[in-house]
Image (spheres, rainbow, N blue to C red):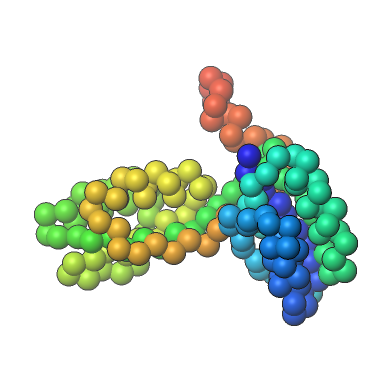
Length: 174
């Protein structure tokens, strides 16, 4: 199972290297990594997607807390969260395929950020499932390059679990 860890750290040089080293020494892979300033000056938030069972994640959490610059580690995998990723996707295009590619982009609310005679570059923002879906649809045109940020995530204070709502038969009226 993949776990999403939200880690608050002091914003000092070498912190990310120590965290990556901890994972490497124990033979654990980090599938996705996003780092940026948090809400408080001098603090950074690291969002990691890590494969492993609950026991492994608990062990990694304990090891992370042993690093002096780590302030808080939270496994947010099963908590209601807002999750986003950013992907830039360069697709091969011709006069015959451009309209279909633009239609797919429109459906996924992707932005065209570069247009050339033989390529189209899209900016896609959304949950990780959206990234996979648009990539699958555009594969038939020829994907030339992809750059992804990795998942970022914050806990929903409303406690509304959109994943639960998506998988249930509840009807929401407003």
